[in-house]
Image (cartoon, rainbow over all chains, first blue to last red; front, top):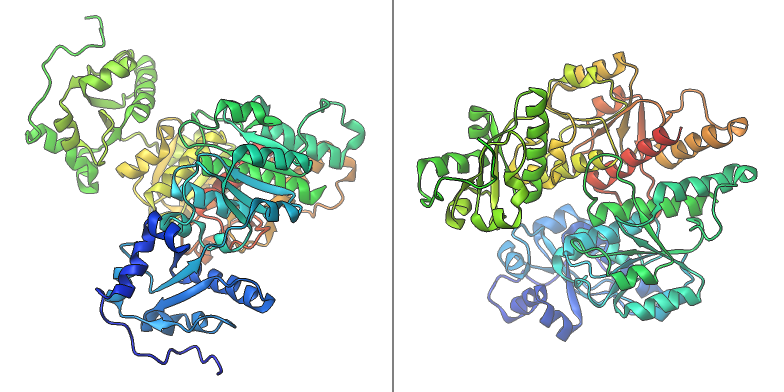
Length: 302
Length: 302
């Protein structure tokens, strides 16, 4: 049957139906873990989920979206949400049903119930990443989502969340990624020691983002620019200095405490984003963006 | 009388007192405009307000803090909040009184009632700024605060909010600045045309941060690095290219719409932070940080 993008069944109208409650429960972690599913909400997030679903469908890989609930108004405005190759047929719901399913106070007309999309650490490493963002004890879902989005923007190859970080399938974290969750390989619940060992075995330098770090990010950027633009004058770079153009994993820590001492000691370098004014610190999402873009620029230009 | 840092009066205990209500009303814009005062909440914000107050007191300039309300527990933990030279004596309040005054659900033990700290556009320009952040129709208080904090971190000389931007004295905006509001000159309610004209008259280049801009920020950074490190090879920079090391004002626009077309046309250059991955955009706070740090680095190294 050709996918017309328009649902045949009448809209679901009962916000107290069991099926509605089952979707709503995915806002909570226990239900997510039990069902192995999570919610993507809003047109932008769902569009990116559909794109991944469709690409995997074409490749014969495990699909992403199990169920797609949408209001008539949203489908009218975003007809493409019914037109991806291989997607499940959208199921029409009333505004009330969508509100009952949603984790937000302002639902945006569409919810996709998705299978978990994270990949095993080994699979991620096998893709030979050159730029990786690792979150260690990042606890705020908004920050985790922002870092993932920044990693996507900077063209990072993968993102890792260690086991002590926030659940990335938390609806607020998913929302904060603005679709980036469906763009690049994400490893969750990773054992930090194993991550560090595995990265090193593959020759990937481990840089800890640390406000008190002894290496200045701008000095590293200048060293990289000098090797690229004026190699004959590169007399200032000490041996063993971090080279941003090399394959790199950045570690980003907890909002309040930063990275644990043991992790700082285990990193190859502790790098600070310089504070030129009088601010006491940068928030972790902001610092992560600056660090990842510095690496991306050095890697692309060198 | 010597400032012992300990209040003499007994704690205020009545959360329904008129004086408490008057403070609480400063969470709203009408009361702020009527009284010309706003709230700084929490130890970090209040500490930065006190530091500015004390510096101005020493210089014989208008002071910042009019009233300081603090719980006994907070004063025990942060004794320095009573020890700044020239500060008003802290007034002890109960937790209930502080909660009734506060705009947040988790008050942090201390509230300062502050006079407005913004400066006139002319005064800011007279300080010959080399790096300025201008917010045009930035509407979210959290984003405005984040941009101000990023400007402070990058060592910008001033921040401007045009008249169509959010009120920076909104408690959420103040909180998001994490004290940076008290660190550098801020102009609010500025007329955009006048700002642009005034900047140009002083030879300050106006760069519009624009996701669709035709100039790539990384290309500008590389041009700046080349002029600095390998001037003889600087054959690629077209005449009229933006030079990040020159005095610069960055324009940052609305979260959803970006900068208005008229503003984009009026800027000297429209500059995009490159997106190397598949994210559709960066949020305005993140993009602002990357742009301001790029300028700060170029200016400091050149």
